[in-house]
Length: 157
Image 1 (tube, one colour):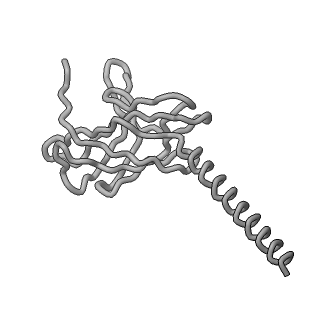
Image 2: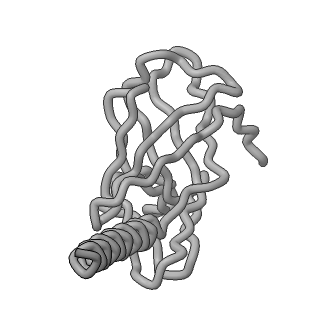
Image 3: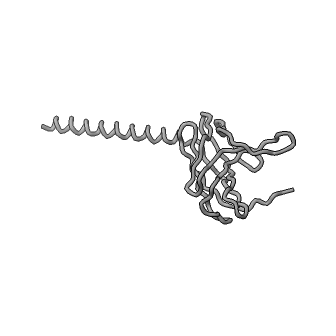
């Protein structure tokens, strides 16, 4: 009888160990997927009577695989688009881009005059100090949360 109990106990211990290994692997895989983080995010205070703003952020890829931002979404506006500013002739022009690369082990800075996120159709005008929440989607489906504080952008001339 005690031999049956010992066998049963050993089976339960082995089963629990297997569950812990699976849970540990799942946790580490999730950690690998979340290799891109967002930091130092801010959004421009919208111009008077405008329902659009730009969001700037530093994206850091802590992983060994290059990633790319391919989309964005927010509850505070109708549409989120990836954009860049570039010189065309003697004019700076803003245009949409399909994706924003975030190289492995590196940073990509979204900043005024370069790559940035456009937020169109704001449902409510945010004030300086408010926080906008945007979720960026990477090429592998990973979601990256971004918390951007609205601030006044003093143009330096």
